[in-house]
Image 1 (cartoon, rainbow, N blue to C red):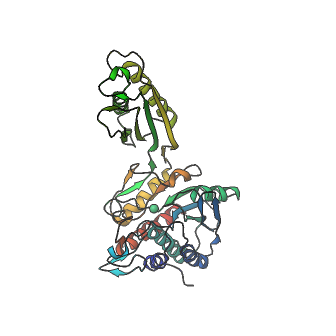
Image 2: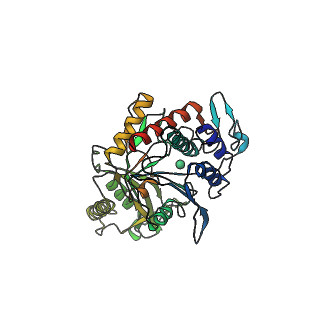
Image 3: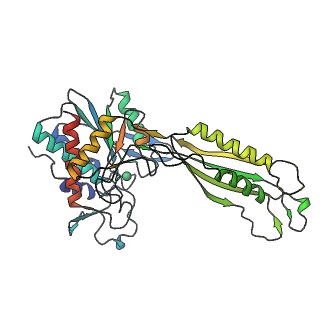
Length: 395
Ligand SMILES: [Zn+2]
């Protein structure tokens, strides 16, 4: 039997498929060709939604008696930019000086290649795992994320699939393999504030109503005091004002309205609802306390508009998963990884509704960049970490 035990060979096959979102590019077929000889049952559901491109996904399951581990990730990649800027062509998987070059090398075809190699080695060494292993792979992580992980999870759950734990193979290590496992994420909410005034001549302010002092007052109320000091597993909640717009080209005109936008990354002190209530309170108090201009009595006239759906905060407390993976990293690399909740959102925020989930993959330094690349030694090390984890988790 010819099992896909070599992560570099697996990765080269995946990189050579130009699967720029939303194109499948042959990447899922290449993955299927690796999984099928190991006995995986493969499904390739395509999901659609008006206004977004159709996206093909892959769910592969190797069934056994025992607990069920999911490995989740994506084969789609971001565009390459100007190909001429690359030292090695982005879909050629060329190797130079111990590095393999190509779009997706670390984000995250490399993580998939290592996990596949780890299962293959596990089967060669121990036979089939004492339980089930599934790969839940989307082609829509770097795009709108509409026809990807969320629908794939629902699709699988409707067929009766359930999981005991999941690893997402995104690149989590900032500098070196073994730096960091992600065990949760801050939540994220975004909003806009619009202050309504009345346009007029800058020389006759009593006839107008300038919204600019109002937006400054409200933005100030958002920025202080601090929301919290952070918690055991999380950084302090942070609000960033991302833009303040008046859009007034004239110096002799008082504008009619002013707008500000903000994004908050919040920890487990809050839920999206309690934080939104806090924002409302801060703005209402500031609007009543401060005057638009001296001598003017009324409150600041503002609207608060929440954007998108909030992304919830979560923390994984599954010891077998977090401590087990941490021990595997330490056994293979000799380094104790930080268990972190830093960074932006990922598909783990959807998986956490189905089972405990952590993220651990390659070193992220070159992700989304020209000359994205992975050290061949890292591919080997990550494969050993995943294999070690499989052996312990199914023991
Ligand atoms: Zn990614």
